[in-house]
Image (cartoon, rainbow, N blue to C red; front, side, top):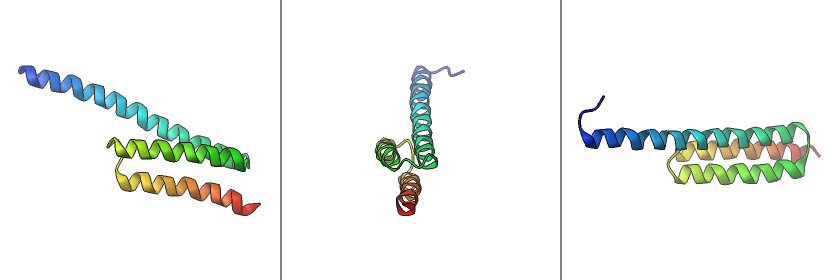
Length: 90
C-alpha cells in the first residue's frame, strides 16, 4: 500500500480509468458481435446499421486513447468486410 498521498490518489484515479476503459472495451466487443449476428441472419439493412454504430464506437474509443489507432482501423475494416460480403452475395 502506498504511503504517499499523491500516490494514493493516483491509484484511485487509475482504478476509475481502468473501469471506464474496461466498460468501453466490452461495449466494443458487443457492438462487433451484433454485426456478426446480423450478417449470419443475412439481414443486410440491420447489418449496415449495426456496422455504422460499431464504427462510431471504435472511432470514439480510439479518440479517447482506449484502443490504438491501427487496432480501431483493423476492426472497422473487418466489420465492413463482413457487411460487404453479405451485400455482394445478394
